[in-house]
View 1 (cartoon, rainbow, N blue to C red):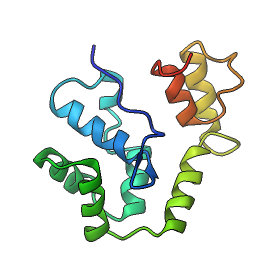
View 2 (view 1 turned 120 degrees about the horizontal axis):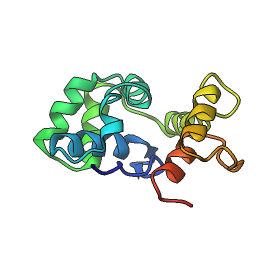
View 3 (view 1 turned 30 degrees about the vertical axis):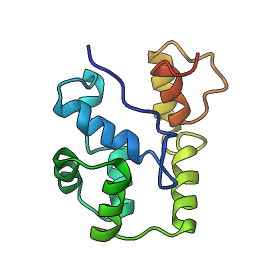
Length: 139
């Protein structure tokens, strides 16, 4: 069956989502990642995140599997991609926390809520909020 990854809200050095992406890499390597996450490894929000950091997903995946804390791995991204300022972190966090709310991802969010039986949950207005409900951290 497998496990869902960490919450997208979990911060690493002030950056949301990064810990979730690393958790998916680690869980997948151990054969513990829930099957419905496997097809999108390195795509979707993972792809947005590595693009923002200007590192390649395969290189980050390799670094992650070699070990190190989430903080060490984000520092590696800063050294091998680009260093994020406080403003860059604010832009990323605000961008990601609002995906699905009145944008091109809204249709996907609506479809996913329906597929999960959550269509009546009006409080779920963004993708990362959907993750919280769909993965059982909120009810």
